[in-house]
Image (cartoon, rainbow, N blue to C red):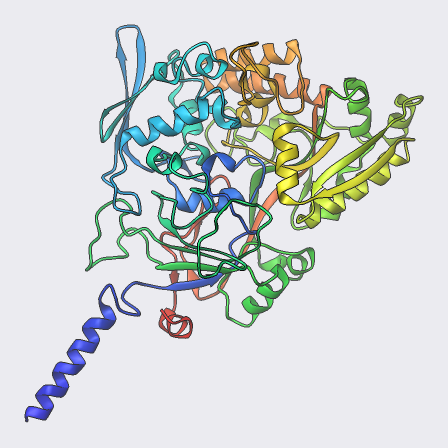
Length: 571
């Protein structure tokens, strides 16, 4: 009898260990996947120039609100918001959820104040700055006329954020911008402590559904990276449930807000190898493809617009490219449908600078900016050749070596423009060299993915106006720095000023269309194709969702029979 009782006690103890927080299964599913192309910079402000960075940012950080694909505004860090007129000021208040960073520190209103002041600081180089310009004094702070202390954002209490606007506007305009992944909160003690904070799992703090559990660099598997180098090879990224997301840890209900325990991407695999493992049932989600793997599974894919365009930037200070007619003719010489076919993977020929998926005069998927804006680009190779007759010169098209699609596009464009009589070469750079060229504007023509930072055309168009670029400002000189392309146009600046002055969605949408027409006439940058998101999920993986940016939401994702996966990985 005593032996039976003892055995029963052992079984109870084993069961308790299994279902507890420390048990193999009690924490929830470990999901092997291939989330997106590899990323090493998890700074929300880094989302502008890579369509895959935003996938990680959206999982690691949460802003005040989020926007779904249909345009509905959902709660994020804010559980409630309301407007209030105070004397001659129009104010918006956001009451914050009780939540913590993944290191247990409470998320407070001051974390938003700090993050936004950082973006608006004259010495920063962050295109998201223009998204904050509806806030009192934001535009003057960026130009250097005022200091960040003058920003109309106040932490009334730890859980109450007060925003004073420049003028009363339709609330959806503000909410749409605040839903940008670039405007999530940040901790000053984290960001100011180390230049590696956004590239090291031990230095970063996140407030989103997941934390950065592991970011492993080749050769440094047993120790943290000592310096940020975008060319370092990353072998693995683990995202782990933020146990403090929207509340304190509840040992009896760990998956109350986030069901999966861990999301693992093994970057020692190529996208092709990852697909083979998906097909064999070893991976359960694929969000990155080669042209071949995309085509092979095209009928099974879930797709949506990415709010991202494959784009060429011109250096408008270059003698050749200073003439808008030359830039336009070069753009007209390119067959965008042929380029989209070359890129594949759902890419669509660009018909304007603003991509598919962007809302127009209503915050609704039934209101499309691109549909209303129509086709603004022309393919006329013969006309381009005639317009460029007598023009000559040598220049390079710069692209990121690691991006196979961009290399293919650069090669195509090189051939097309060489046929016009120019001496053109495609120049691939390492990640570090590419980032340096982009930020310094040291290129002739540069290939990039231009990421819309909100679901409004404003985020695509505003940065090309001189007071809206978000570029570094020398407060000792003129109170602005033009866009990285060097583009300056009084007519375009007036068009974006008119957008900013509008107070309703309908009026702003109309003026944004006016601005896009000017941009597509002057062409300091030309969109070639619209990027589309695509993913494959295993039959065993359920309850995925997506936001308006095409970011995957794994909060409620459930993996059938995950215990066997946990067993195989080791918990």
